Amino acid sequence: MSDNKSDITLVNAPEGIEGAGFFATSIEKVVGMARKHSLWPLPFATSCCGIEYMATMGSHYDISRFGSERPSFSPRQADLLMVMGTIAKKMAPVVKQVYEQMAEPRWVIAVGACASSGGIFDSYSVLQGIDRVVPVDVYVPGCPPRPEQILDGLMRIQDLAENESLRRRNSPEYQALLASYNIK
Amino acid sequence: MSELTNELLIQKLQEKFGDQVFDIQEPYGLVTVTTTRENIIPILQALYDDEMMQFQFLTTMCGIHYPDNKGQELGVIYHVHSLVHNVRLRIKIFFSEDDAVVPTATNLYATANWMERETWDFYGIRFEGHPNLIRILNVEEMEVFPMRKEFPLEDQTREDKINTFFGR
Image 1 (cartoon, rainbow over the protein chains, first blue to last red):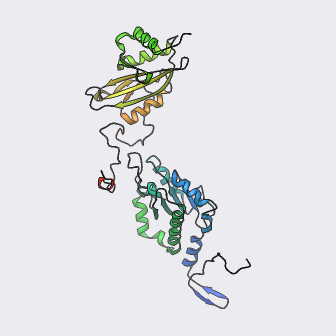
Image 2 (cartoon, each protein chain N blue to C red):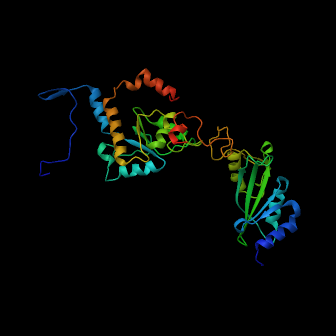
Image 3 (cartoon, rainbow over the protein chains, first blue to last red):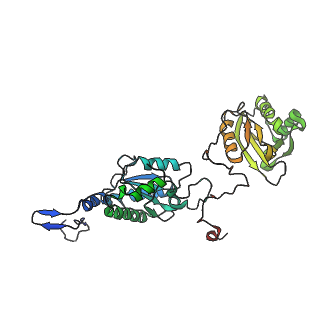
């Protein structure tokens, strides 16, 4: 890079006390920063929104820039469940099982009208929004949303991950939320 | 082998089954006949075994619901195909929705197994003698038969998708 006009931006260090040879900050901020830039999405793509997500994974939009380099097609190491597309009532237990198999901390993003609310399919066979079976952190509107919108949803999740207290997942409110979904 | 034209097919049907088949029509060149529940399996069997016609392929089988036809609300429609002649025949039966029981065709056509499960799933028509009559496409805990006219298409558990938002 010979010119000084670079597009590359570095992540700033969190707030803390700096001195000669040391830097002190709270572990929450460090962990939040690490989690924010290493979200591993688990794409649960069923229909058109899934195709839009594939464009988001491609080189033009490049979801890897956000630390989401590895779309995990297994719940094993995934942090972020991305549900993209129509979820039929028959598929609902599968979504719930995948969510239950993910380890904490975990976030959920409902991409598009169908995952958020059933969309145009106000029908006996379609689940009217995945928030009926799993708790959702971010809803992305659109039918289907453009890749920019999916990236924006991912950035909102990043904000949540950065600012989340380390104790949040142990709080009684969060336990009550999971209990309301019958999730252990 | 002589060609199986529609005229010949209708003539053969009337010879074989007499007044067991009625309301014979030819919409778009597809011979359509109506029969009764009691006769449907023997007729399918006879068409299967007929050496000349050889209707040995069940193309499709599905239910239908006409709530205005009192006493004949529900129906089942069979399309049998003669692969030898490349001729298709449509056979309909109608019956009351209070007594929605039809003899199964699984003993004749293995493929009728899933078709009859689908018909049970969507219309609530029971098939007497079916080996495994459970829902095939919808969730098992569903309590309605979605294709019947008395059950609305919309999901009944919503509050936010009301008609005012849809110009209805």
